[in-house]
Image 1: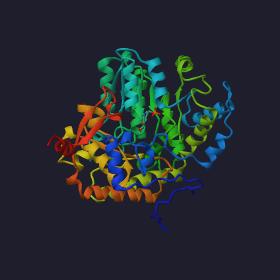
Image 2: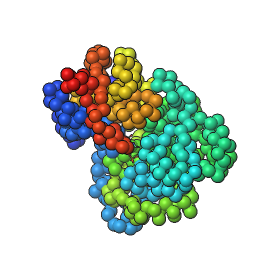
Image 3: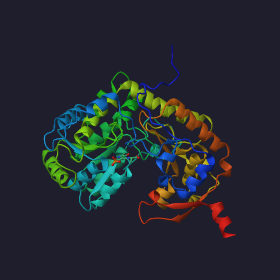
Image 4: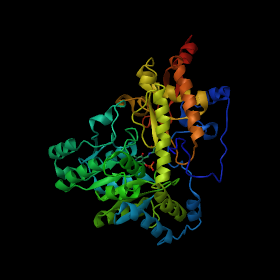
Amino acid sequence: MPIRTIIEPFRIKSVEPIRWTTRKEREELLKKASYNVFLLDAEDVLIDLLTDSGTGAMSTAQWAAVMQGDESYAGSPSFYRFRDSVQEIMGYKHVIPTHQGRAAERILFSVMCKKGDVVPNNTHFDTTRANVEFTGAEAVDLLREEGRHPEVIHPFKGNMDVEALEALIQRVGRARIPLVMLTVTNNSGGGQPVSMENARQVSAVCKKYGIPLYFDACRFAENSYFIKLREPGYAEKTPKEIAQEMFALGDGCTMSAKKDGMANIGGFLCTNDDIIAQQEKNLLILTEGYPTYGGLAGRDLEAIAVGIQEALHEDYLRYRITSTGYLGRKLTEAGVPIVQPPGGHAIYLDARTFLPHIPLNQFPGVALTCELYLEGGIRAVEIGGLMFGKAAKMDLVRLAIPRRVYTQSHIDYVIEVLLEVWKRREDVDGMELLYEAPFLRHFTARLCPTAEVAAAAR
Ligand code: F0G
């Protein structure tokens, strides 16, 4: 019998209450938060889709492993369990724990990059870009054309433009490119996967010029499952075999274990290069900690050791990708504009098309984010004009799905709320920016609906 109902491949043993608020309360709370959902208290949010990072639920096996955490400063058995688990999947010689992904990025780029260097990536995530730029190097995004159009349907919209990569190497010279990076899946581009074929081609170009290839592996398990579903020749392989094949194409990786590590904190940095590894460990000791804990507790290492394996379980991945796809499909059927096709960890609403009457300087993405909170207590995040300023090419609203946290009925509720907002979208007001910080302004910005600003002026 073909089963159409998406069931969570787990039972719930421990529950965390979520709190209803009334529309009236939410109006006041949002006003108090200056129409910036980052300034809301989490307890005032019913369904929190701000991020899938560190917000997942751990399994009974992970909690059991946490009890085995050995907190020795040096040489803890928890480190060896963590290292062996990571090595089984990633295959790299050196595994260096860090407190989260950006710490791995900072160490990697500090060791490998200098002023005047160029780092190509399919799309740098914002912390990745910032850490490259902090060393004085230039971060270049080389996404293929189909990845730049939200409405275009393509199985691997995260792919790197291999011809552009080779052209860049020839233009700036191999000596100025210390490494190439591939982000799997491409978070900033809508959670879109990279194909094995593309990774193979990028790897071949890197080998031709003797440039190391690193993966930003945050959502590697989801990427592997997309390859299994969509790429010819992979249907019979397990997600783990696919991940192993992909990592074998590179020389190392950075990882935020807060995503497909299924942990609430942690990350790591891997490399096959002995000299680079030594330099990285020296820096690690300076700011993160001794190389067998890297800023994490032994119990965190245990949670990652188990979690990174669980992220590759096929029944889990099927539920995860199907559930996110279901949300995307229901919205698409109703005409709601989203980045197509649905990604692995999130659905991205196209706010410019959703609210065409709101001019870009009145932040359509922020307006939509506020409306989702007012209508149903849902917290999403704007990725557009407020986050990136005038450089923003799109105004998106990301609904990121925490791992193993919300059930199918929560997803149905999100759809219900969104369709309600969609129905009365013409009444949604734009936003005026009242305060902005000199950098990373989206975290602390204060805004006000334009109608209220006008009323106050009268
Ligand atoms: N790379 C990618 C592709 C990411 O999505 C993130 C984090 C990082 C690196 C940095 O990892 O947070 O552990 O330091 N993304 C989160 C998000 C914050 O909400 O998408 P981190």
